[in-house]
Image (tube, rainbow, N blue to C red; front, side, top):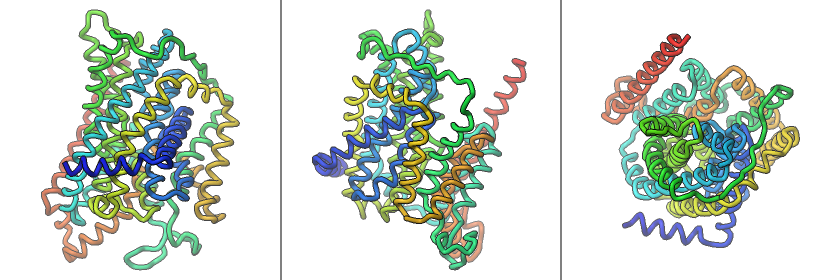
Length: 503
């Protein structure tokens, strides 16, 4: 009951003309950036991070909620109409969605995607409202050893999941940890890897890192591929914008199954929505294979409904894990954690006490943002698709200018412009050699936390390493981590054997 009262107060905070304007602007900008191939929801948050510094914290995070969920839907528009998903989270839903578009049912595919995103997001938001305060209470039981175990769990789980090669994932993690140690060591006061430059004593700004890796890295990657043959044909969104009764009956169970699959993955650090969306796609495909006339491969509406609901459900509960535990379970959540720190806030159990007005306004904005996005996207999805016709050289030139201006506006340091270019080239090199970007962002955000908690644990235990695995919570986290890694290794060995057998 207390949660409902707090949520009601959050709605009163959000339902003001100015805050509603921020929700609307966030939804529009998030969808617009998400539609563009190669950008996606994480890029939308990274690009708009510098813009929000002039806003008060409540207005900024209300806007971010619209950006987050708007970007997820925008990802799907590009995948369905152009077969080029804006982000990897939209790949699973785009498989059947694009087939629906090719058969003249693009509008139905977009409607299925919008309703699925709404259902998944709303259910996840309801669960967050009721369970996030409980998670925050649980987090008060965490000490230095437990927080270190949580950070290591996030490091290894995300590195192992988001890349086909565990070694590449761990290599990306090491790059992120190397970036995170630049600056003054808090414990000893020694300067580390600063090259004697006073501007680096505070470390490399997270805005510089996110914009460089995500925005400029993608710009350089697109520029390097210019002139290659790519299928960029845009399919028109034709037909009715609503679902028939038969289509709705087919999609409804898939929406709820996808939501059920996606909800728990928001709390588990596996790199985002890629895993649950493909699990949902696989589940729907298995169920469809039992029908007398299987529909998958011909544009099955369940193949769009399930993954879309799973992706948004994961994004919703990921925000709960971020608010209650301070644990970013995806690249987008890591950027939002950086945004909290820019405002002097630390997500975790104390956030509900120290900034309760902000937390409940943010949770209320999830519900309002979902409704706004449904209104924006259900009838106007074909208009969003027009953005895909913008010539790429104009588009990415604009992104570069916007990114550089945003970075300079936050610090007024010329060195930051040099650093963002260098990190952009690093992001380009990582894309070319198949290194995932998510582990870098997670390492940059959680690296200092892991180092601090490790030192605290060693200080309390007088240097006894057994203290790191002395509590039930830390033992449980390390055991779960071992199971995740072993399961992934077994899965990949089986996949390689199957590939060899086919050859």
